[in-house]
Image (cartoon, rainbow, N blue to C red):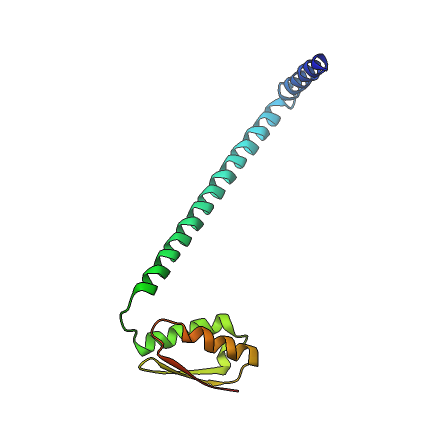
Length: 139
């Protein structure tokens, strides 16, 4: 078996040398192989950069979440309303159907949503930083 592997290796090396050193098309084949190798190296580099950037962004996001959870500074009504509107976009199918009013941390929701969405919206908004209470007037 060992002798057969050596013979196959020598045969493959000879075939590769003949393929790449061919006087007619060898130059083009070598250039093509080089270009494919450079392209593969560039793809690996870009992939590694993409992964590193994504990891860095996730770490920054996690740090921002931790910092905001520890921050007890009061939130303005305008900023709280913007945060609630943003959160509604993740919680309901049609966030434009829900009206939001904020007054000193007291949130009043009106409009229409499905019963499942109403329960999840109330629960999620009650846990947000800056929300004192949530009054649900949704249908």
